[in-house]
Length: 348
Image (cartoon, rainbow, N blue to C red; front, side):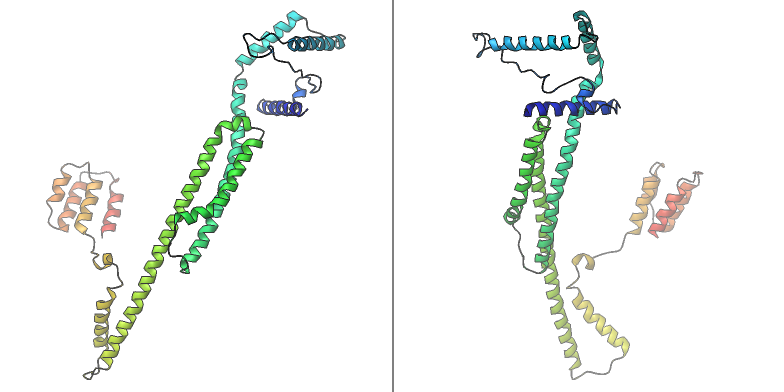
Protein backbone atom coordinates (compact mmCIF):
# COMPACT_ATOMS: atom_id res chain seq x y z
CA UNK A 1 0.00 0.00 0.00
CA UNK A 2 2.87 2.38 0.75
CA UNK A 3 4.45 1.72 -2.66
CA UNK A 4 1.09 2.18 -4.37
CA UNK A 5 0.59 5.52 -2.65
CA UNK A 6 4.12 6.58 -3.64
CA UNK A 7 3.49 5.59 -7.28
CA UNK A 8 0.26 7.58 -7.38
CA UNK A 9 2.01 10.65 -5.95
CA UNK A 10 4.79 10.40 -8.54
CA UNK A 11 2.30 10.05 -11.40
CA UNK A 12 0.24 12.99 -10.14
CA UNK A 13 3.36 15.13 -9.74
CA UNK A 14 4.63 14.35 -13.24
CA UNK A 15 1.17 14.94 -14.73
CA UNK A 16 0.83 18.30 -12.97
CA UNK A 17 4.28 19.41 -14.20
CA UNK A 18 3.47 18.34 -17.78
CA UNK A 19 0.08 20.09 -17.65
CA UNK A 20 1.69 23.26 -16.35
CA UNK A 21 4.21 23.15 -19.20
CA UNK A 22 1.44 22.59 -21.77
CA UNK A 23 -0.78 25.23 -20.07
CA UNK A 24 -3.59 22.79 -19.31
CA UNK A 25 -5.02 24.21 -16.09
CA UNK A 26 -7.89 21.71 -15.89
CA UNK A 27 -5.49 18.74 -15.47
CA UNK A 28 -4.18 18.18 -11.93
CA UNK A 29 -4.01 14.40 -11.45
CA UNK A 30 -2.97 11.42 -13.52
CA UNK A 31 -6.56 10.11 -13.41
CA UNK A 32 -7.66 13.26 -15.27
CA UNK A 33 -5.77 12.01 -18.32
CA UNK A 34 -5.96 8.19 -18.06
CA UNK A 35 -8.50 6.21 -16.08
CA UNK A 36 -6.48 4.75 -13.26
CA UNK A 37 -7.38 2.92 -10.06
CA UNK A 38 -4.41 2.42 -7.78
CA UNK A 39 -6.02 -0.63 -6.13
CA UNK A 40 -7.15 -2.56 -9.21
CA UNK A 41 -4.94 -1.37 -12.05
CA UNK A 42 -1.56 -2.39 -10.63
CA UNK A 43 -0.21 -5.91 -11.18
CA UNK A 44 2.93 -7.47 -9.71
CA UNK A 45 4.92 -9.98 -11.76
CA UNK A 46 7.21 -12.64 -10.34
CA UNK A 47 10.68 -13.19 -11.82
CA UNK A 48 10.74 -15.14 -15.07
CA UNK A 49 13.48 -17.45 -13.83
CA UNK A 50 13.90 -19.30 -10.56
CA UNK A 51 17.47 -18.47 -9.63
CA UNK A 52 20.20 -17.11 -11.90
CA UNK A 53 20.14 -17.92 -15.64
CA UNK A 54 21.09 -19.57 -17.92
CA UNK A 55 20.51 -22.91 -16.13
CA UNK A 56 17.61 -21.66 -13.96
CA UNK A 57 14.18 -23.18 -14.78
CA UNK A 58 11.19 -20.93 -15.63
CA UNK A 59 9.14 -19.66 -12.73
CA UNK A 60 5.52 -20.92 -12.94
CA UNK A 61 4.36 -17.92 -10.91
CA UNK A 62 5.33 -15.70 -13.85
CA UNK A 63 2.86 -17.53 -16.11
CA UNK A 64 0.18 -17.30 -13.42
CA UNK A 65 0.70 -13.50 -13.23
CA UNK A 66 0.42 -13.23 -17.03
CA UNK A 67 -2.80 -15.24 -16.98
CA UNK A 68 -4.17 -13.05 -14.19
CA UNK A 69 -3.39 -9.87 -16.16
CA UNK A 70 -5.07 -11.35 -19.26
CA UNK A 71 -8.18 -12.19 -17.24
CA UNK A 72 -8.34 -8.64 -15.86
CA UNK A 73 -8.06 -7.10 -19.31
CA UNK A 74 -10.84 -9.33 -20.69
CA UNK A 75 -12.98 -8.61 -17.64
CA UNK A 76 -12.69 -4.85 -18.09
CA UNK A 77 -13.35 -5.23 -21.81
CA UNK A 78 -16.50 -7.21 -21.06
CA UNK A 79 -17.68 -4.59 -18.56
CA UNK A 80 -17.14 -1.84 -21.13
CA UNK A 81 -18.65 -3.84 -24.02
CA UNK A 82 -21.72 -1.63 -24.02
CA UNK A 83 -19.51 1.23 -25.16
CA UNK A 84 -16.96 1.53 -27.95
CA UNK A 85 -14.19 -1.08 -27.58
CA UNK A 86 -11.09 -0.98 -29.80
CA UNK A 87 -10.23 -3.98 -31.89
CA UNK A 88 -6.73 -5.46 -31.72
CA UNK A 89 -5.85 -3.97 -35.12
CA UNK A 90 -7.13 -0.55 -34.00
CA UNK A 91 -5.21 -0.78 -30.74
CA UNK A 92 -2.06 -1.61 -32.69
CA UNK A 93 -2.54 1.52 -34.83
CA UNK A 94 -3.16 3.67 -31.76
CA UNK A 95 -0.02 2.39 -30.03
CA UNK A 96 2.05 3.00 -33.17
CA UNK A 97 0.71 6.57 -33.49
CA UNK A 98 1.36 7.18 -29.79
CA UNK A 99 4.96 6.00 -30.16
CA UNK A 100 5.56 8.30 -33.14
CA UNK A 101 4.15 11.23 -31.19
CA UNK A 102 6.41 10.45 -28.25
CA UNK A 103 9.46 10.24 -30.48
CA UNK A 104 8.68 13.57 -32.15
CA UNK A 105 7.76 15.41 -28.91
CA UNK A 106 10.71 17.23 -27.40
CA UNK A 107 9.01 17.68 -24.06
CA UNK A 108 9.19 13.95 -23.32
CA UNK A 109 12.98 13.95 -23.56
CA UNK A 110 13.25 17.27 -21.77
CA UNK A 111 10.91 16.32 -18.93
CA UNK A 112 13.54 14.49 -16.90
CA UNK A 113 15.81 17.52 -17.12
CA UNK A 114 12.88 19.71 -16.04
CA UNK A 115 12.38 17.58 -12.95
CA UNK A 116 16.10 17.73 -12.21
CA UNK A 117 16.08 21.53 -12.51
CA UNK A 118 13.11 21.80 -10.15
CA UNK A 119 14.75 19.45 -7.65
CA UNK A 120 18.07 21.34 -7.90
CA UNK A 121 16.37 24.70 -7.36
CA UNK A 122 14.73 23.36 -4.25
CA UNK A 123 18.01 21.91 -2.99
CA UNK A 124 19.93 25.13 -3.68
CA UNK A 125 17.33 27.12 -1.76
CA UNK A 126 17.74 24.86 1.25
CA UNK A 127 21.54 24.90 0.84
CA UNK A 128 21.58 28.71 0.85
CA UNK A 129 19.70 28.69 4.14
CA UNK A 130 22.32 26.30 5.59
CA UNK A 131 25.22 28.46 4.37
CA UNK A 132 23.60 31.61 5.76
CA UNK A 133 23.10 29.82 9.07
CA UNK A 134 26.82 28.99 9.12
CA UNK A 135 27.83 32.51 8.07
CA UNK A 136 25.57 34.01 10.73
CA UNK A 137 27.29 31.86 13.32
CA UNK A 138 30.66 33.09 12.03
CA UNK A 139 29.54 36.73 12.34
CA UNK A 140 28.52 36.19 15.96
CA UNK A 141 31.82 34.46 16.67
CA UNK A 142 33.73 37.27 14.94
CA UNK A 143 31.97 39.93 17.04
CA UNK A 144 32.72 37.97 20.21
CA UNK A 145 36.41 37.65 19.35
CA UNK A 146 36.59 41.32 18.32
CA UNK A 147 35.32 42.42 21.72
CA UNK A 148 37.78 40.12 23.48
CA UNK A 149 40.69 41.43 21.39
CA UNK A 150 39.76 45.07 21.98
CA UNK A 151 39.55 44.43 25.72
CA UNK A 152 42.96 42.75 25.65
CA UNK A 153 41.59 39.36 26.75
CA UNK A 154 42.89 37.62 23.60
CA UNK A 155 46.44 38.35 22.43
CA UNK A 156 46.93 35.32 20.17
CA UNK A 157 44.59 33.32 17.99
CA UNK A 158 45.06 29.68 16.98
CA UNK A 159 43.37 27.80 14.15
CA UNK A 160 42.65 24.80 16.38
CA UNK A 161 40.62 26.94 18.80
CA UNK A 162 38.55 28.37 15.93
CA UNK A 163 37.96 24.90 14.47
CA UNK A 164 36.82 23.58 17.84
CA UNK A 165 34.16 26.28 18.00
CA UNK A 166 33.06 25.40 14.46
CA UNK A 167 32.68 21.65 15.03
CA UNK A 168 29.26 21.59 16.68
CA UNK A 169 27.55 23.95 14.22
CA UNK A 170 29.19 22.38 11.15
CA UNK A 171 28.25 18.85 12.19
CA UNK A 172 24.63 19.89 12.81
CA UNK A 173 24.32 21.36 9.31
CA UNK A 174 26.10 18.35 7.83
CA UNK A 175 23.54 16.03 9.46
CA UNK A 176 20.71 18.12 7.99
CA UNK A 177 22.31 17.69 4.57
CA UNK A 178 22.52 13.91 5.03
CA UNK A 179 18.90 13.78 6.20
CA UNK A 180 17.76 15.77 3.16
CA UNK A 181 19.34 13.31 0.72
CA UNK A 182 17.77 10.39 2.60
CA UNK A 183 14.23 11.67 3.10
CA UNK A 184 13.45 14.04 0.21
CA UNK A 185 11.13 12.68 -2.47
CA UNK A 186 13.65 13.67 -5.20
CA UNK A 187 16.54 11.87 -3.50
CA UNK A 188 16.93 9.49 -6.46
CA UNK A 189 17.47 12.43 -8.82
CA UNK A 190 19.83 14.28 -6.46
CA UNK A 191 21.90 11.31 -5.32
CA UNK A 192 24.73 12.12 -7.75
CA UNK A 193 24.97 15.71 -6.40
CA UNK A 194 25.40 14.69 -2.79
CA UNK A 195 29.19 14.57 -2.90
CA UNK A 196 29.39 17.98 -4.60
CA UNK A 197 27.28 19.70 -1.94
CA UNK A 198 29.20 18.01 0.85
CA UNK A 199 32.49 19.23 -0.63
CA UNK A 200 31.07 22.74 -1.09
CA UNK A 201 29.97 22.83 2.53
CA UNK A 202 33.40 21.68 3.72
CA UNK A 203 35.17 24.24 1.49
CA UNK A 204 32.89 26.97 2.84
CA UNK A 205 33.81 26.00 6.38
CA UNK A 206 37.54 26.13 5.58
CA UNK A 207 37.17 29.51 3.84
CA UNK A 208 35.27 30.95 6.80
CA UNK A 209 37.95 29.73 9.19
CA UNK A 210 40.70 31.32 7.08
CA UNK A 211 38.72 34.57 6.86
CA UNK A 212 38.07 34.80 10.58
CA UNK A 213 41.72 33.97 11.29
CA UNK A 214 42.86 36.77 8.98
CA UNK A 215 40.50 39.31 10.54
CA UNK A 216 41.52 38.35 14.07
CA UNK A 217 45.22 38.57 13.24
CA UNK A 218 44.70 42.02 11.72
CA UNK A 219 42.84 43.14 14.83
CA UNK A 220 45.56 41.78 17.10
CA UNK A 221 48.31 43.50 15.10
CA UNK A 222 46.32 46.73 15.07
CA UNK A 223 45.82 46.47 18.84
CA UNK A 224 49.56 45.99 19.34
CA UNK A 225 50.37 49.03 17.19
CA UNK A 226 47.75 51.07 19.01
CA UNK A 227 49.13 50.08 22.42
CA UNK A 228 52.66 50.90 21.26
CA UNK A 229 51.52 54.25 19.95
CA UNK A 230 49.81 55.06 23.26
CA UNK A 231 52.95 54.06 25.14
CA UNK A 232 55.16 56.28 22.97
CA UNK A 233 52.63 59.09 23.28
CA UNK A 234 52.83 58.97 27.07
CA UNK A 235 56.62 58.90 26.96
CA UNK A 236 56.67 61.86 24.57
CA UNK A 237 54.33 63.83 26.80
CA UNK A 238 56.58 63.24 29.80
CA UNK A 239 59.64 64.15 27.76
CA UNK A 240 58.14 67.41 26.52
CA UNK A 241 56.91 68.25 29.99
CA UNK A 242 60.36 67.70 31.48
CA UNK A 243 61.97 69.92 28.83
CA UNK A 244 59.43 72.67 29.45
CA UNK A 245 59.96 72.43 33.19
CA UNK A 246 63.73 72.53 32.72
CA UNK A 247 63.50 75.61 30.55
CA UNK A 248 61.10 77.25 32.99
CA UNK A 249 63.45 76.62 35.95
CA UNK A 250 66.56 77.72 34.05
CA UNK A 251 68.45 80.44 36.03
CA UNK A 252 69.23 82.39 32.86
CA UNK A 253 65.58 82.51 31.83
CA UNK A 254 64.37 85.81 30.47
CA UNK A 255 61.12 87.21 29.16
CA UNK A 256 60.42 86.00 25.61
CA UNK A 257 58.17 87.56 23.04
CA UNK A 258 55.34 85.63 21.32
CA UNK A 259 57.42 84.99 18.19
CA UNK A 260 60.35 83.66 20.22
CA UNK A 261 58.03 81.41 22.23
CA UNK A 262 56.44 80.13 19.03
CA UNK A 263 59.83 79.43 17.43
CA UNK A 264 61.03 77.62 20.53
CA UNK A 265 57.86 75.52 20.63
CA UNK A 266 58.16 74.62 16.94
CA UNK A 267 61.77 73.58 17.44
CA UNK A 268 60.97 71.30 20.37
CA UNK A 269 57.92 69.94 18.59
CA UNK A 270 59.77 69.13 15.34
CA UNK A 271 62.58 67.41 17.27
CA UNK A 272 60.21 65.04 19.09
CA UNK A 273 57.15 64.59 16.86
CA UNK A 274 59.18 62.59 14.31
CA UNK A 275 59.04 59.70 16.77
CA UNK A 276 55.31 59.33 16.20
CA UNK A 277 55.30 59.93 12.46
CA UNK A 278 55.75 56.98 10.06
CA UNK A 279 58.94 57.07 8.00
CA UNK A 280 56.96 57.45 4.78
CA UNK A 281 55.47 60.76 5.93
CA UNK A 282 58.83 62.14 6.95
CA UNK A 283 60.41 61.30 3.59
CA UNK A 284 57.42 62.25 1.43
CA UNK A 285 58.25 64.45 -1.51
CA UNK A 286 56.11 66.53 -3.82
CA UNK A 287 55.08 65.30 -7.30
CA UNK A 288 57.39 65.75 -10.26
CA UNK A 289 55.36 68.09 -12.47
CA UNK A 290 57.56 67.52 -15.52
CA UNK A 291 57.14 63.75 -15.36
CA UNK A 292 53.39 64.06 -14.82
CA UNK A 293 53.03 66.44 -17.75
CA UNK A 294 55.14 64.16 -19.95
CA UNK A 295 52.92 61.17 -19.12
CA UNK A 296 49.79 63.15 -19.95
CA UNK A 297 51.16 64.22 -23.32
CA UNK A 298 52.25 60.68 -24.17
CA UNK A 299 48.80 59.35 -23.30
CA UNK A 300 46.71 61.89 -25.27
CA UNK A 301 49.03 62.31 -28.26
CA UNK A 302 50.44 58.79 -28.61
CA UNK A 303 49.35 58.69 -32.28
CA UNK A 304 51.20 61.94 -33.08
CA UNK A 305 54.43 61.71 -35.03
CA UNK A 306 57.72 62.13 -33.16
CA UNK A 307 55.86 62.87 -29.92
CA UNK A 308 58.52 61.11 -27.86
CA UNK A 309 61.39 63.11 -29.38
CA UNK A 310 59.58 66.41 -28.97
CA UNK A 311 58.85 65.75 -25.31
CA UNK A 312 62.28 64.43 -24.38
CA UNK A 313 64.12 67.50 -25.71
CA UNK A 314 62.32 70.06 -23.57
CA UNK A 315 63.89 72.51 -21.14
CA UNK A 316 61.07 74.38 -19.46
CA UNK A 317 57.34 74.25 -18.89
CA UNK A 318 57.01 77.10 -21.35
CA UNK A 319 58.51 74.77 -23.93
CA UNK A 320 55.83 72.22 -23.05
CA UNK A 321 53.07 74.71 -23.69
CA UNK A 322 54.52 75.59 -27.08
CA UNK A 323 54.64 71.86 -27.94
CA UNK A 324 50.97 71.51 -27.00
CA UNK A 325 49.95 74.50 -29.14
CA UNK A 326 51.97 73.23 -32.10
CA UNK A 327 50.36 69.82 -31.93
CA UNK A 328 46.85 71.22 -31.53
CA UNK A 329 47.12 73.63 -34.45
CA UNK A 330 46.71 70.96 -37.19
CA UNK A 331 44.02 69.15 -35.18
CA UNK A 332 40.79 70.98 -35.87
CA UNK A 333 38.71 68.35 -34.03
CA UNK A 334 37.67 69.14 -30.48
CA UNK A 335 38.03 65.56 -29.21
CA UNK A 336 41.39 66.36 -27.57
CA UNK A 337 40.37 69.64 -25.96
CA UNK A 338 38.24 68.22 -23.12
CA UNK A 339 40.78 65.61 -21.89
CA UNK A 340 43.64 68.08 -22.30
CA UNK A 341 41.96 70.74 -20.19
CA UNK A 342 41.21 68.21 -17.46
CA UNK A 343 44.79 66.93 -17.51
CA UNK A 344 46.35 70.42 -17.40
CA UNK A 345 44.00 71.38 -14.58
CA UNK A 346 44.99 68.23 -12.69
CA UNK A 347 48.70 69.03 -13.09
CA UNK A 348 48.31 72.67 -12.13
